[in-house]
Image (cartoon, rainbow, N blue to C red; front, side, top):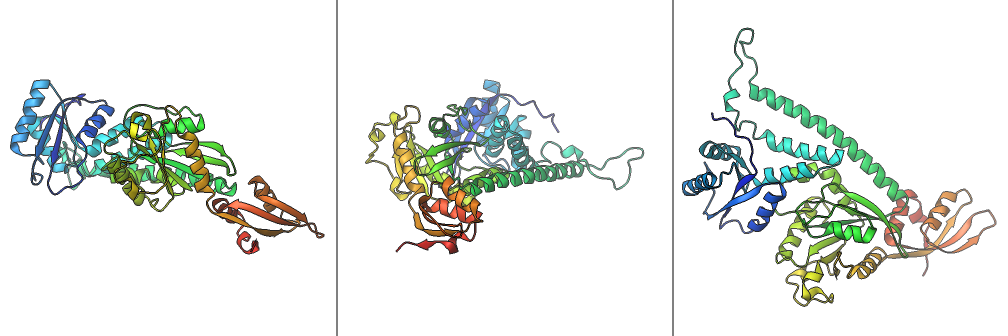
Length: 433
């Protein structure tokens, strides 16, 4: 077994197309992913096959082409824009004597570099360990033998089994820590619910401009960079909306095609913030030729996390770069009409369309209005205070017993949130005919 070489930044990228795969990932996006991870693509190998080769994934001709590129450019890393089996990775490494990285491994590496919070680091490590668990044999087959020597003879335990046992322990430890984080998030979410504060989540394909839009709407200073996965750790900020009051705006991690399922599972606690939102702002790069395809990919992930039935406002961001969107009435929107009807053309950089977006958010949150009379007893001061806190009181008539007869008018979303605080509200409401 050869010595595993140290990883290098000069990389050869390999992208194949297969006739039976209708949705192959973008080769240009693949190169951006590699650069986002810190690699320097020095050669790109393209090819077409009817099916992946069982042994090398690629054919022998492409394998020789990769070898030549490695030697010509002094590269030490091969990155595949595909998922290779552990055996295929091992076989290519043997033949090329270079480190091999799959698309999942590449995305995991980017996430590991970008994680800043304690929770984010735990989530990335969990995804890495789950990915690694199927690949422990790669590069370590010489440790499969039983331990030997004086005092070590006998059934014993293979080194590989020991590695797997230690890995399982670490995975269990991380899951326990993430469960505690999940409980903390749920407590914070319940606190916001008790205060009737709705959450609005920014979702979208990576590098669509979510963080720039988030900063423009909230005045925050979240990192903005023209690179994939610039934002990894979620950020929450409060803003005030007319007739709605305080709402929480959440900036989330960007999605990407063929997002590894391990990452979706690892970031489940974070993505639950999206699934529990009152409204989604789906940010789309209007200047991107593949915007329709990216909308589809984002909706696939939303479906996976159970957020596909939430109300969406589609924001065509970066519209200042596309003349067809500058007036907010684009006639050539491709297949966008197949998606939710609320579409706003904006430019988070110039501020274009932000007022229209805020009005659309306000309208979406207040579409359903609850109007009626409620009898509030003298000992139900907290309930009365909740109505005033949410600007829901239209008229109030004091009663002889110290209670109040209150006419309320409130959005449907706030009403449901208040009903979670006081479950008896739904039975107390007397609708106005």
